[in-house]
Length: 369
Image (tube, rainbow, N blue to C red; front, side):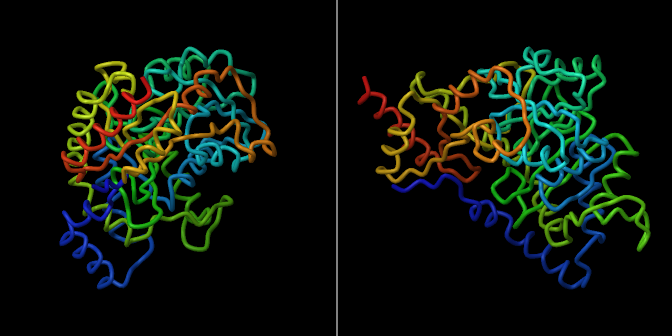
């Protein structure tokens, strides 16, 4: 048996006619940039997230960058975030000229630990970027309380958390701004690069719309320096077709995760959701092993695809040598990065495939005893 890590094609096949209709609708319209499809998707995704405003952008990375710029963050400012995340989180901060400040994660959730925020605080602190990693929300109440006390912006990196909940609130809806990636492998994925920023603040929404489109207030009137970062009509139409299925797909992921958790040996099982307040979307299903590399090789021999998210924390990436940054204690981050392994997880994963993965993982554990 061969088990893919992810199979985007299977999800597309389940909504093929809707995708075809969406694509043809855009082609027939002859309008491909900043049109009705984008406006409709922005309205629908804002409603899904429980906020008033959504601004479609070219990618999740640019969404983070523009969100920071909309808050006035730039050179001389510090932005607190986690090092255990995908590098785009940090690249977006660096692109504004601000300084990333790294704090450690909570071992139960892999997300930024609020207990370490005080150690990261300085006179230059302007924002916190909590990352809802693998689909689990960060401890937002504690983060928001700290941010309010110290007058910091909170910009949620919800790139992996479409539909995840924290105390019944959607990921992305709790901070000043929430940023999403619609990279094809995401729970809600486009057929190319795409992203969005959501907010309740009308002034931030206006500034984001200017920033994404050359700084225009109206055609050929540029009041600020802007960018070309627009979610195009084709991707917006595709996302509109897929959005009504997101909750069903997330439920499938949770069902698969529950089966993994019930059958994997305890030594491999990831920390369970730390609080009943959180509803995980299981963008990724991540286990841990002291023999991670050997386990990955063992599974590869048995035709099981796996990936490592993320083997090198951001603060140890060579690119950071050229970027001003600051680190607090990151011992949990570094230990977890040596141990994590992502198993196959996608809505169309068959139970017999999952059970095969479980048997192969458990057999490695028996061999190591």
